[in-house]
Image 1 (cartoon, rainbow, N blue to C red):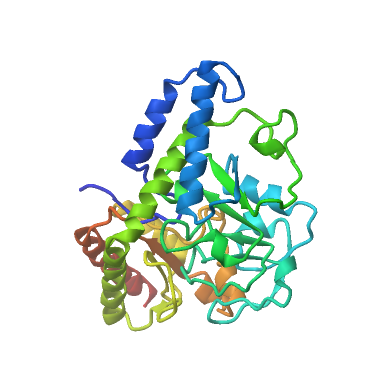
Image 2 (cartoon, rainbow, N blue to C red):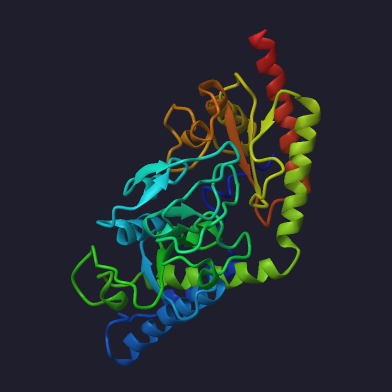
Length: 347
């Protein structure tokens, strides 16, 4: 039986549009910093992608600085700024700030001074969409970009970080988006690439894929793609809830990403669920991909007030535009079988 991929929040399969753009970019020999015809052709690819990303992100008139990842974009934005954040933030952000902002059981964060704070648009583990106050120094839009309507120019933040591989682009390319005129000091120094803010020859192939994926994701938002994904997510949750009454669905009833389900079956460790479902042919996760492999309870759920046992018993199932109802129902059936085996061993 074919494997079923249900870990789209960790990374997405490469879109055909991105693949096509990347293959075309491979034929360009020039360095985008060179002034000859070949260099100008490579530069044109980068600038086209910059426009595509800016349009899809609602950031026309802002500066889009290409980086190697959202992690690098966070470092470029946050180093030396002394921003505050909440414990639910991704490690790429939390590594640069004081995790002192209070998180409620509903996953919302209280921000007293937005100009000195960083906040995510949505949480990648729970899918909960956060209420963004005006004037934030930084927003992490990585989990949300391409899944829900969002416009950088309307959110009121100074800066935002995004990544290509979360919306069907290639791994290894991200961007820092800043309001025009915002001061950003280069951390990688050398040449004058990326408006003097990020030295190093641009990853033309990856950037081309990023632009194409961003453009395609914007088209998806105009159709019924994500409403269909929401329907499948709700089928999954309703079927499991009807079978296992003790299961807790984090953020149920809240404003969430359309594709994300985080659920807790108290006592059945998340890492165990991931392993048995992997053997059954399904890829899911026990939290953020950047923290998986570490045997510990979810820091996001702990920050929201869940206990150690509950936080260690969570899994995340994240769907995508290519997910089918049949795949979701196959997962439900397999999960119920594994749950029955666990209950029999635990009793």
